[in-house]
Length: 508
Ligand SMILES: Cc1cc2nc3c(=O)[nH]c(=O)nc-3n(C[C@H](O)[C@H](O)[C@H](O)COP(=O)(O)OP(=O)(O)OC[C@H]3O[C@@H](n4cnc5c(N)ncnc54)[C@H](O)[C@@H]3O)c2cc1C
Image (cartoon, rainbow, N blue to C red):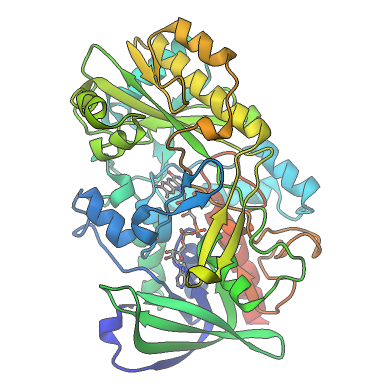
């Protein structure tokens, strides 16, 4: 069952085989797998439960209801980077763009060699990815539904001879509403809320929504349960009623910000000192292009196609048609200039570039002085600044090859490029982290990393923490680094692996 606080009249004490904190890309698949094996599964989810009837295409409502801090979570450092996090049943997958890519293969080699994860093999992952792709109806974006922005950008990339194509997506019959990040109104995106969670419930799992896990309960050094508070739907504050779940295994799947935060609060599983550290976010930059011709209507797929020519160097471009509310944020202007450009929205396209980090690492800390909240400290450094600039230059190059009249970049001193001469000037210039306007990131990872050495990692390859028996972690925080692409499929693949180890433990 999916339960809300209104259905719970008093404090509740339950017994389960597994208590899972969080119902996103890690927690959802794990809940389904374990429930299907006949285990009694209880999921505790801080966010509310929304269905396609609630997905009304209004961005402001979606941010308020389904995102942590109304979508305004930022990293502190140079530059400030917007890092939105989902807070709803299905986790961030409910509000993500639906790109479903397998990890970049050389990254797995690095995990095996540098992080001691030899047990995770290419063969095993391939089998799991294939299963997930079938289960989630993954297929390439349909160029007709994708919209003209994507087709125009791809034409530019092809003109330059770059490796590019249509992105694989976990969307069944996408109708191109363009609002994946506000919840899919047609129900075609196979996010965790419409795939793994309903299946988990059908197998007998219970999902307690608007319920915030606060402590992991321990006995003789082992995890034995979770204590949580039900939340008021309006204020988001505890409503006075509590939930305590006694469990043989506890799994932390609260995401790469909340999972380390919960551990840091309790001083748990941190003999390595690595909890909260090694934060990677896969930072993203955007460019906007103005054309003489109309590229609208504003329907299409926001993340429809890619250019992976420089994936080996850590640069991946992805984009498509985004709604005006999202488009407006990418223009590096204010006031009248911004308004007059937005009037030309039908003639504009937007594209994004993501950077796999070489030199930048951040940290999740417990900001006790700010009322006990997690904060993300992160500075963009060294080669990653260069890569972000290279991604902007590459996108501008492609836009001009596609026939753009102007390209707007997020780099101070180069906000408007009128042609190749301006582009060459940008290429020659020295760019600092502080020069980037409106940088964003969508893939926080690495803060409870998995590894073969308890001195340098928080969990084993099985997902179990080195320090606390029966406490597992299963979400983006365990990935030792960015998989080089959008991570949801890899987080789900790790969840499928970890489900096997939890099942073994419970069966023993
Ligand atoms: C706008 C956007 C677009 C994206 N697009 C893509 C894409 O196209 N493809 C892709 O691969 N990735 C995409 N991502 C990233 C992807 O969705 C995430 O990497 C992935 O969902 C992370 O999985 P997770 O299990 O670590 O955390 P989440 O999916 O975020 O799940 C964590 C859950 O835990 C809950 N939680 C946290 N703390 C507590 C607590 N104390 N008690 C109870 N519950 C708690 C949260 O409410 C949340 O629901 C996107 C992200 C964003 C923000």
